[in-house]
Length: 183
Image (tube, rainbow, N blue to C red; front, side, top):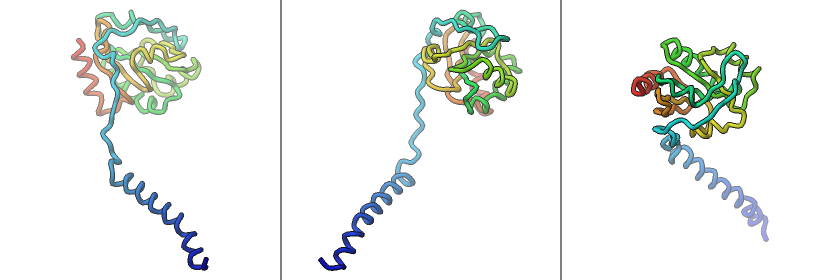
C-alpha cells in the first residue's frame, strides 16, 4: 500500500463519525427537538381518594387520613418533600393560597421529621395536616409519580383536579377555579 492509501484509511473512521455527529446534531436542533409535552394525569381524577391513614410527619401537625378529606369543603392535598427543589419554588404560592382561605393538607414523601420542620420554618407552613408517606404508597395510590403534585379534593373526598409540578403564579387562577368547581 502506498502512503496515500494509508492516510485515506486513517480519515475514513473520522469521516464516518463526523457524518453521525452532523446527523444527530441536525435531528436535535431542527428535527422534533420540542415534542409536545406529554403529562400523564392520574386515573384517580373523578374517583374517591384511596383509603389511607398516615402518621404525623412532624410533631406540631396532625397526620392525614382519607376521612380528613371528606369534611364537606374542598381542599388541596400537596405532595411534597423537603429535598425537592421545585417544592421550594412553589412554597410562596401555597402560602398565598392559604392566605386566600384555601385549606391545604400535605403528604410528605420519603422524608425525615427534622428535615420537614426545617423546610417549613425556612419556606413557610401553609398546611393544616401533614402525613408521613415514608414508602410512597399513598402517593402512588393517588396516581402521583413525582413531587411536587397538588390535588383538588372536593368536600366528599373525590379528586377533582391534579396539578403536576410546582405551582407557579400563573397556575393560581386555574387552581382557584378548580376549587370553586369542586364546591
